[in-house]
Length: 195
Image (tube, rainbow, N blue to C red; front, side, top):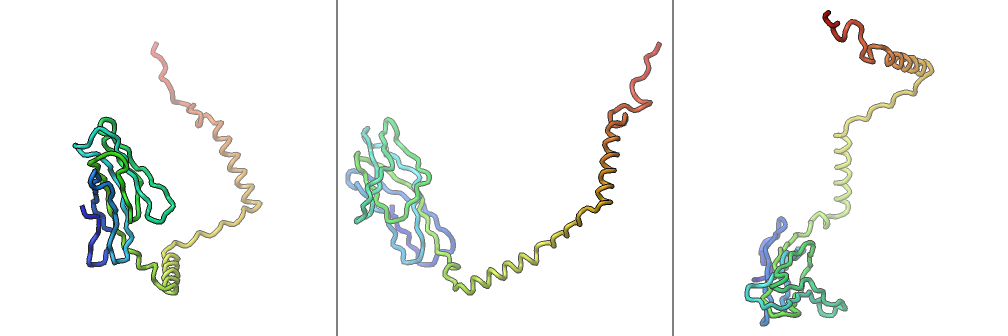
């Protein structure tokens, strides 16, 4: 499978393509790279690493090899064996090209699959600062116009108000002791038993 994204028009939205490669005795390494002149950000999100039906019952080790000149060491992403674990699912493994995959041990065939995502750079980031500041000010003005007016604060309680509140509280507490609140209402209740 071809791992390059070829497009002659600028990307309007993220483009996602299914991607895959095969590693075996003849092709122990595969380099995922893009030849894209456009200003796009590329990501490779790995999904699965699995052995083919003709894979020998031996350990197959797949690793990511760092770029030339880097002091990093290779990173193993999967160790598979047909009789034990013929497939591994990858989550959260997103790589930026170029990426080199290598079959460190085993003869394959081993298949790596994933999702190649190309994102166009946001043109708003390249706008002059003055334009951005004007847009921010306009947005704030629109938000202020749309928001409802704030309620006015209530005045603090006066001496008469505090006395009235105490009187109300006293009346409520006396109502709670009344037979009406306790469910004892005169004239209601069980009927007298017949004699």
